[in-house]
Length: 137
Image (cartoon, rainbow, N blue to C red; front, side, top):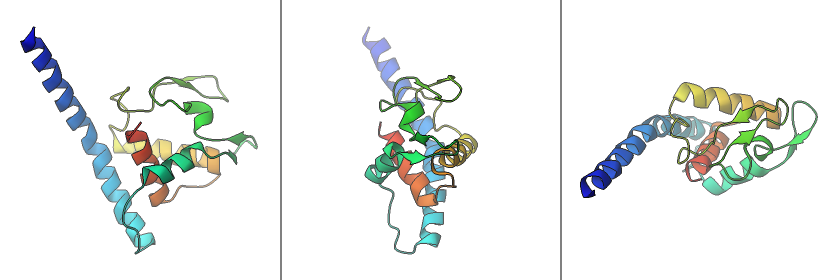
């Protein structure tokens, strides 16, 4: 029994470690961009990310929305797209190991969701703050 528990712990550790690498690389890229945009930039902040994620704005369809409108406040459970009704898998990588596992997908969804909620592209700082917030959920 102890061998199985040890195996599961080791497997889980390596799964989380392997999953963290792409998001860490993307955060490094975003930090470099943020520093170019603002030389006083020092680090991303999950609390700023939470404000970005939970604040409500008139989105691209003229409706007041926030990221939580579709993803909900608990990022470890399914969400639902308020426009299409489609299920959205949990956003938290703690509940969904596929999340934040590919830079290409992170770029795609951050670009799309910032445009849907804010009607604009997010800055490198905003994207990094939101990613850090999601990682901590």
